[in-house]
Image (cartoon, rainbow, N blue to C red; front, side, top):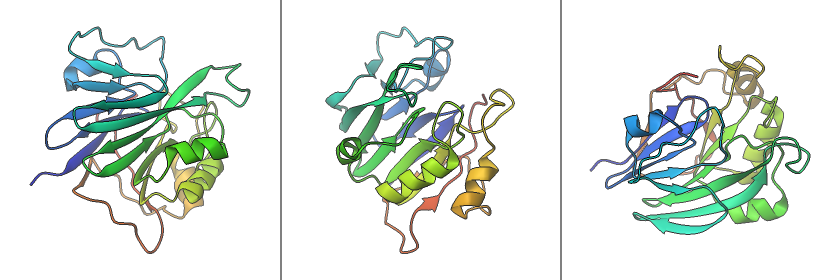
Length: 211
C-alpha cells in the first residue's frame, strides 16, 4: 500500500500526495497546473507569483476550519513580520490532517508563535518551517519553535539560494540543531509517523523546482 509522499517545491512550497488525493501548500503560477493538485493551500500571496486561474482547483487561504477530499484543514492567523503585520502583512499557517498524519506548515512566518497560536496548531507530526531569517524566522527562533512543538519530523524551508541571497544558508541551521550530517532527500515517503526517543528528526528535502 502506497503511503504519503511529500516533495519540496521551490522555496517553501510542498506537494503532498496520498493514496486518494493530493494538495499543495504555497505553490503558485505555472507550477500549479504542472503539478495538477485538486487542493491548494496558500499561507500568503506573492504578487510576483499569481495563483493559477484553474476552475477545478479548490483554494484555502484564510483562517478557519475546512474539510475537503478527506483532509481536515485548520488555518490560523499569523504575521509575516515582527510588527503585527504592519510591514509585510499577515499570513495563514496551517495544520493539515491527512491520512492520519498531522502536517504543520508555517509559510514565511515572521515571528515566534504565541501561546494561543501554538494551542491552535496543536500536536504536529511533520513540521515545515522557515529557518533562513531576513523576512522570516531565524535558525535560532526555528529551533526554539521545534522544541516547543516537538514534532516527530521537522523540514527546514526558506534558506539561501542563488535567487534568495539575503537568507542564511541551510548549513547554519543544521549546525545549530546538531544535524550537519543530514543527507538531502528528493522526497519524504512514509505510511505513519512514530516519535523518536532521541527527539525531532531533521529531514532536508531537495527542491523539485529551484528558486
